[in-house]
Image 1 (cartoon, rainbow, N blue to C red):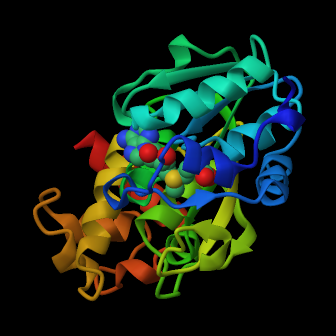
Image 2: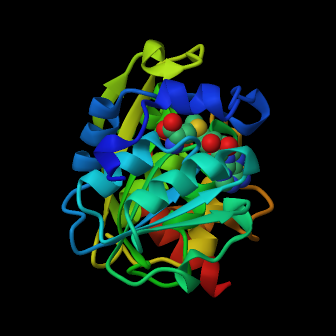
Amino acid sequence: MSLNDLPPLREVIASHDLKARKSLGQNFLLDLNLTGKIARLAGDLAQCDVLEVGPGPGGLTRGLLAQGARRVLAVEKDARCLPALAQIAAACPGRLEVINADALALDPLRHLTPPIRVVANLPYNIGTELLVRWLTPATWPPYWKSLTLMFQREVAERITARPGSKAYGRLALLAGWRTDARIVLGLPPEAFSPPPKVSSAVVHFTALPAPRFPADARVLEQVVAKAFNQRRKMLRSALKGLAPDIEDHLIAAGIKPTQRAETVALEQFCALARIIEKI
Ligand code: SAM
């Protein structure tokens, strides 16, 4: 059987009794034209291994394989999906490896060969956590070349937000620091089964060869998280406790102690992280 001969996804879901579970963030994409489009937005897959988190019944997995991915590693927590995924693997011998695991607990590098692209319709409950992990390894460039990820629209807007906007915060800073990130596709709730309450969007991240400004990932993340934790406060108060003499460090980084986090540019946050790291 080839990919084109596989049964439609609705049939797969019915025959394997894959009733969507909210606790696993299951909103499935059943339109193969759409999953093919998302796979194309990920870039040229032919020479790449692809990490897919949460393949579910395998709609996006089929798209990735149809777009010529060299190999796909699909990590799925829900064992009910395994028979449906095994059918896809049988249609593409040697190109799909399925691991029944929690993506948060797995080291994908043990199973993949660079160049690697990550493509996923993420479970909403671990999407942000996975993204922050992908953006903050200690060294850069990371093991992946690009990330093409589905988020709730509101999260996608936070990732791509500009300074001064309401959505600007930790995610925009971490994404902007080491990647080019842009929204490449918007999807209405009806694109999924069952439809979620909100719209979704696909964000494509390209890893930059080096971060835009030098900083230690762990320190930068800590500074930014604390700064935006109380985003209405002036930074001299929001960052109290981060280091002694915080007002002096803010000034040395080119930030007014009375500024709020949402008005501070990435370059200044990186300067502050470098100062804090040395203390
Ligand atoms: N990729 C499929 C699609 O587009 O139709 C399913 C996407 S659904 C939004 C998210 C998938 O992630 C579900 O299949 C769910 O079981 C799986 N999942 C949830 N938590 C997970 C985890 N911690 N590790 C791996 N997979 C997980």
